[in-house]
Length: 134
Ligand SMILES: [Zn+2]
Image (cartoon, rainbow, N blue to C red; front, side):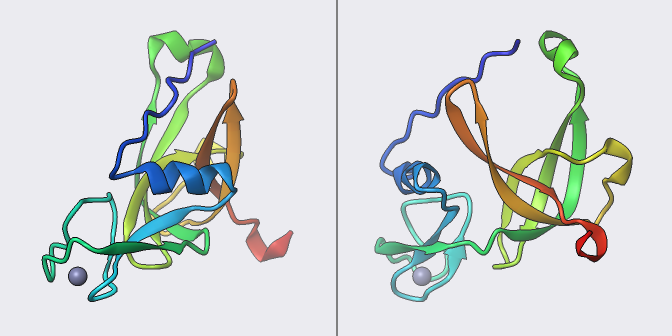
């Protein structure tokens, strides 16, 4: 069983993990020009403001790209799908796709946020939206 390394939040990403603990996916937003940025950074690349706030993501996204990770230490767990997502809010996020068969993954696949516990470490991950609400 692969061991999940717990996150070690620092000043730049503590808000993210605090949000995860409350069941929210929080994005960093410039407090001056309101531009979202992901991954987080201390300064806004658009207006150079150091002031920032957070915005809760809707949890809706589309698959922009993906890889299948088959690490030897995770052979028993099966392939892990690592996705680069276009969040509905317009920024990209790297995550994992869960509860989704590998042959169902494609560019533009609509996915939704879910929180998954891995040995006591909760991670924001995504799963395919059921087609037609089924
Ligand atoms: Zn800004």
